[in-house]
Structures are given as C-alpha cells and as structure tokens.
Image 1 (cartoon, rainbow, N blue to C red):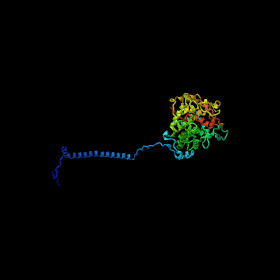
Image 2: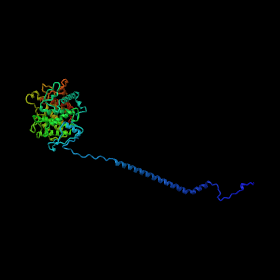
Image 3: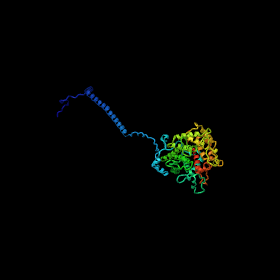
Image 4: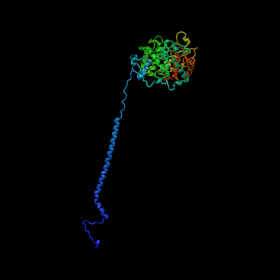
Length: 506
C-alpha cells in the first residue's frame, strides 16, 4: 500500500479561515454593541425608579385611607354625650323626697293613708313664706351630730349609760297604740312594785312629743336606729290626734293646751325631716299652720288664740317648731320669727334676764303653795329659754351683748338636786344646758360640772327596782303636771345636749 504524506493533502473550504482574535479585537466588537446596552440599562433604571415612586405612594395612600376609614368607623359607633338635665322648678306643694313602694308601705303602718284633702298647702299667702330647703342623703347642719361618729361618747361613759337607761324606761312604758300615758304609764309594771308619779291626763300629747324628741335626739328615726319602731308607733299616734281641719294636735280642753300642740309640732317637724318621710309633710305643715293661726297679730303666743296676750315660755316652744320646720323645707312665716326676735328684745334687760310677759318678770307659778315649794329666785328658766332661742334663730353673742349677760346670769344659778330647797326644775335645766352648750368655753365647762350631781346621780339605777330603773322622780317645779314621763323625757333630752345640735354660731 502506498503511503500518503499528510502534509501534502489540501482540503478546499468555502468558510472564512479561522484566525486567533486579539484582546483589542474583542473590545472593539463589544463597543460596537454598546449603544444598545446602555439604552437597555437606562430603560430598566427608569422602570425601577417609577416602580419605587409609584408603588410606595399607593401603599401610603392606601394606609392613609385605611386609617381614615378606621377612624370614621370609630366615630360612627361612638355614643354622643348625654344631653344636659332638664331644668326643674321647685314644687310648692310636693316634697322632693322620692318615696318608693316600700316606703309607702312603711308609712302606712304608722299612719293612715293621706288623702288629697291632707295635701292642702299652707293656710297663708305664698309670698309670706320662705322657700323649701332640700335634703340630701340625710339631715346635716344643726342636726349633723346626731347618731354615729362617736359623738355620743362626748359626755363620757356615765352620760351614755344614763341616756340609755332613760330611753329604755321610756320604751318600756309606751302604750301599744304609740302614746305615753301621762297618768297611767304604770300599767306596764306588771311585775314588782309599780312606778309612782302620775301626771295630768290632759298632757298625753305633750309628754308623748317630749319622749319622741328624746328618741329622735339620740339619732333614731322612722327609718333607722334601735328605736325606730318606738318612733313609728309614737308618730302614728300623734298623727291620729291631729284635727284634719285645723291642724291642732289634741284638744283645747285645758287652758294651756297650746303647750302640748307646740311641742308636738316640734316633734313632728323633726320626725318628718330627719326621716325624710314625705307623706308626713302635710301633717307637720298643718301643725305649723295652726301655730300661725294661734299667734297674736304683730306679736307672739300665749294660751288662747289671738287674744293679744303673749309670754316667753309658750313662744319658746313655738320658735323651736318654726325653726325646725323651716330647716326641713316647710313653709313658715318669716315675719313671725322677726317678731319673736323683737319680743325677746322687749322682755330682756341689761342684766340678761328675760321676763315672762314683760321685762324683769320672773317665771310663773301656779296658785297656792307652788311658789313656796319652788321659789322663783332659784332659777332663770325664761332667761334660758330666751338665750337658747336666740342661738337657734342665728343670733351671735358677739353682736348681742344681752346674750353674754344672760349666760352669766344662768351660770350664777346652777342645777342643784335638792328637794327641800325647791331647786329642782327640769324645764330650766333643759333650756339652760342647751343654751350654755352653745355659749361654750367657761360657761359650758362650769355648768357641765354640776350636771353630774344634779341629773345623773338622782336617776334610778337600782336594778332591784326594775320598774323605776332609768327614770327620775317627778319632784320638780312642773312634775305634778307632766309626771314621771315628762321628767324622764326632759332630763334624757338634757343629757343629749352634747350631740343633739351642733354649734349654731361659729
């Protein structure tokens, strides 16, 4: 076989002959395509820039719209503020105390259902009267010290125990119908020796009212307190004794019947106001109306209606009823209290003494040996009445020098339990204690020191004599009239002076 020399073989080709390209040739080739590359990069950059600008803005607007929608949604469900309360006008014939069904039931238990006739307004023109004073959750002001707060202990343990014993005796001697029987209270002493010391039967209304004032003074009301049932029965009986036409409690059979009515009006005003029993309002209002119809024209009060006879003793109880009624929103004749202030100025003198029917006149005594048994000069009952009433009507010793003089005069005749000397006068001691408590300072301190011996020690506290326990013997100036009930109620009230009223003048 013949051998072929490969180097001699030639191959014909139609393609361009390959040759090795240099670096420069490659760069030249790429630069030839550069305009299109740059253009592509620029276009992509613009697209990316537009996407960055447009898309976040849309998101931002969407977020803003969502927030606005959420806010709008919240505003749509938000409750509008409550409208302002409607403007109210004070009613002249209706009490502002809301009485629930339960309260009506309770009041029905202590008194008959009050009819439309009982809702009669005051008997006097409305332009003569003071507007009503509203009550909140309870009485404050001059009555704010009653009950609770430890104020009862202000007089010490001996005072608290004496008050408790007095109230318990009164409770044990209350009749089932609610009254205190002035001359027949001892019927409750079914075991052991019965009590003595009857009073006059014509004063059942008066002594019942005094007993009620003692329970109210200790802080119990128709609604609350340990003696609320006692008060319910007593107030129910008093209400039953009121003439529906005149408003008079009891009858006018005795010559001094107005004492009974005035004290009962005073008690009814307190029971109504402190208990906030609106259905008692017409009862208390009628009682005030009767006093106004009894009062002398352009002056004050005494035994018979409008006979132009006046005295400080009857007037004192009427002032207390008027002032209490006014405080608790009843309609009272303001000019009547102005006339009372004038009267007290007329019957007082520079020594501080307040006279009975005129300046310088001492307390009254009954015919017979009454003045011998109870010498007038042993006390200053009417001075005490006048001084306390001045405080209750808002007068200030700093502005009325006669008040300081009256306090000095009272202090010169302190309470002394001495049956032989005839110094015992529960009426005097009651008013004097309240007047000097208001006076304060040395007048009160010195008077109070004498109360323990004069009032607390003579109280019956022998448990072996259970029927007498807590009471006082009615051997005072007016004991024959009021009896043991009067004596016990009045001296229990006397011991309550620490907390029954706050200081009336600051």
